[in-house]
Image 1 (tube, rainbow, N blue to C red):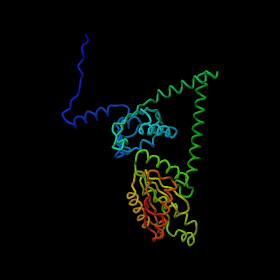
Image 2: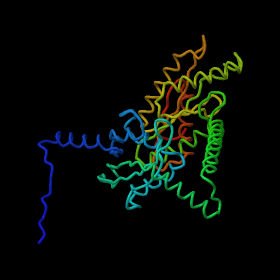
Image 3: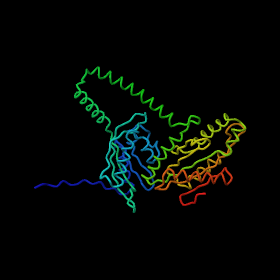
Image 4: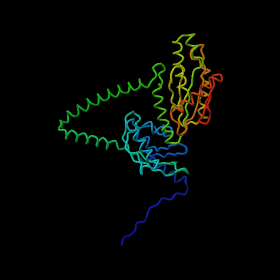
Length: 352
């Protein structure tokens, strides 16, 4: 006859006591835990999450962008596909290995496990909790074993000293190659005059933000701005002055938008903006503030300029062409109605 052992339970006198116990436990956990609220977009992370990656506790904003921006670029698409398959019900579990950027710029291999704990009335995820586990040493050991097996099968086993020297040489070559690749990528994605993102990079970022808006059901808005009467500057002061105005405007706008907003030169005197997690009305307020600041700012001594803005919001199902058609039409209206103004246009409004 087996004797049943008593089950030990912890009882708390209040919710506050229970929360204190939970917070103490989370603070002790070496690896990191996270809690995503799909309704508000807020993500809470345990102290261990920050310690594991070397960041100061609370140094990141409580949103999903923080997580996405530290995923290794080579792992990003695979992680997003896995996440979307699970949250859409196509996969029965969420568990994936990938690399996260640490505070020193290096990457740490982690296992990410999570479970949906709440859905809204429409069946969409409204709360999800998970944990990041440090598997870096295990992953490196696995990779080393795979490489050793490959060498054995190929009959290329060498002395340990030779392997070490080759590995060091390869690491140097890889580092040089990565630097060259990064430089080529930077040049291909940067506007040579203003130093901000170019049209190619903007289109890539818009596709990414569009997918992120669909994934998390966040609002997404964008705007286009055009310098009013810019031709007069080139005609009366010369193209060199015009280039200075473009460069100064780019610097000024970049300094007056949020860190997660994306700003690029579209071409000529036109610039474009992406406002993640911002509604149409919020984008109108942000661009109108920019419009006012620009009108009061001297682009160079004795020269002030104004800008016209067209604004719209992404709606599920919109393609890139529809979005650009709306902001172009909104900008046209702003110019037609007297310039130095913001005009919004949503998918329900008629085109001019």
